[in-house]
Image 1 (cartoon, rainbow, N blue to C red):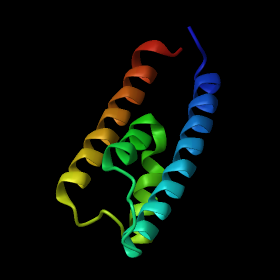
Image 2 (image 1 turned 90 degrees about the vertical axis):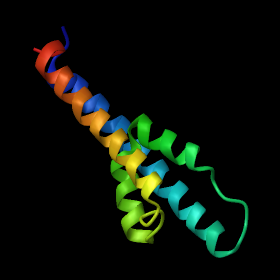
Image 3 (image 1 turned 135 degrees about the horizontal axis):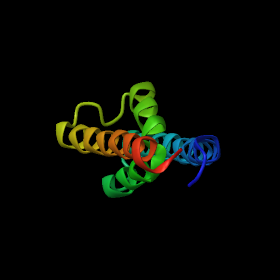
Length: 97
């Protein structure tokens, strides 16, 4: 079994990296939307969330006021966050000493 500190540090670092990438992606997508240019596909933004960048994606959505009125997009984001919460709970409860 792994220790909580080793997994928590690695997971936290990974989520920080993915969150930074999500903020950058949201900023670029918002800029493209304003300028009527080619956008980043929503599937790609959701992939960043799913890979651990959901905190950054939520922060960026609030800061840039981007994607917050699209109910289907927000719903998928909520599902991703829920999946992460359940996964972390499962790891803590069953796999980590």
